[in-house]
Length: 286
Image (cartoon, rainbow, N blue to C red):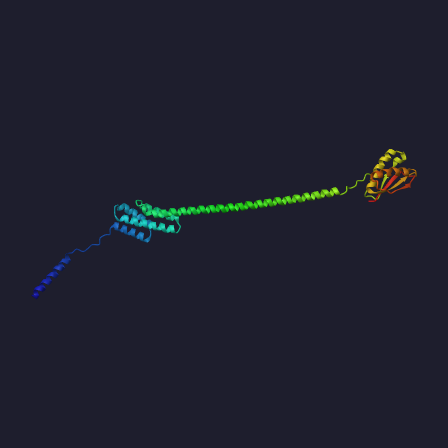
């Protein structure tokens, strides 16, 4: 009985060894190019290299058209672009948000609902940005207008101040001119001498017509003498050849002096000088 069992066990072991020896060894098979491409796409997505992932997806869409995995990766890449767009939108970077949205749309044009939320958010942000820019523009324009108004007001104030100053100067000049004119009008006119030199101590006026008995010329000459006597308050000395000529000349001169100034009494004296041509000596007292 024991020998039978032993023989059966041995036979089974031999058959098992034989069977093992008849099984062929598994060979090292090459990896499928499509599998490698999808692995590379996975790696690009994992590392965030979206441009490489998009290019790899495009290549796979051409070489493996109809592969069900393409839609999955297409959606994955779209989602990543949408996430980038959301992040850019939250950071206020509307340009990059718009670019990310554009890439997402190009990847899933058949599913516009995927990008609607981000599209609306960007549009709202754009509208808010434009409204803020317009508000700022209006504020800047208002500030500029206020500054310009203040500048014009300052210029107007300066112009008015200059006008007031000019009016004050002109008024002062007019007052000075009026004062000067009044002073000139009030000041006595500078007396003018007709025969004598007012600056000299005395002046001599010859009377040759007295020797010739030319009374007409004598009277004419005494008119001028009387004017100088009254104007310069002259003392008169009559120098004649004969004593009889003194009253005659004195009478003619006094008559003319009284016509000019009845209140003035001239100081008249006489000297006889027979050898000398008759003359008058006038000595101003002022």
